[in-house]
Image (cartoon, rainbow, N blue to C red):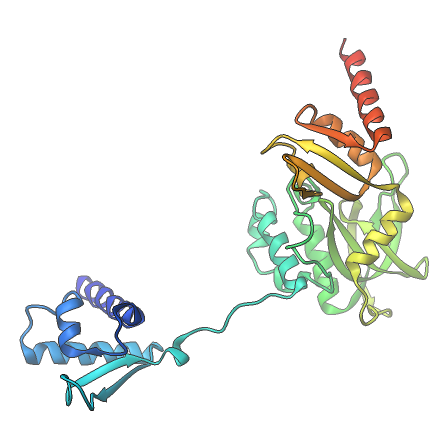
Length: 325
């Protein structure tokens, strides 16, 4: 075991020597250079060195390290054997993600923080979850465990993903409000969309005969049904669809806040920082959510615009103060 460990360490060092050759202003490495600069070759006889080096080269080629051998044709080392790494064959292509893939990776990373969903997130569900959700994480808000991911069950998520992947419709119980009894809904699912720390199920509502969105944490008792009859239309942006339906259900506003650095993560995630110190701009946020959230983070978060929101935050804080007293 110790000999194999030493062999592996030497072969790794040899590979790094080739990868770093350009930093030595070298286009190739000679046997003499390798013998003097790569550990575990020194102290060997000429025959033992060459045998070990050839064995290492053979092993590296088998595992995919493309080392080329050639004879130097000019210069002071003319006639010597030399080696170089075929970088074009060894370098991996650049890794790029589509907006859908980036969304899934972002969700998976956040889910890994959740106790129940941690193992589930690492199980490979992310390969299936995008389902058309268009989301570029470089320009949109982050997802945090303060939202739906902290309470979304693995069972619910697994059922939705299986239905989407297999092209089947689903039925489920939906709790539209805390006081109303749950209703049974039928849907051809199109995808899961993260928006403002919430996760929405988007698809074609077969009872309403129209596209609809449902907040995932209000869904329970999902049952897979027959094959879906209403596929997602080509070119449909599910993120835009969710935002459009949310606008119909709530009052969306723009606001400016001063936020203490490192505080009020939920508010900072929903906005963008302005050039002005500790100032954040929030666009198209739910007015009621902003009032409640800003009040809960006071005085670390202070609304500076619009005035009617400032007034409502102050009124809410005073009401809470009276209750405490």
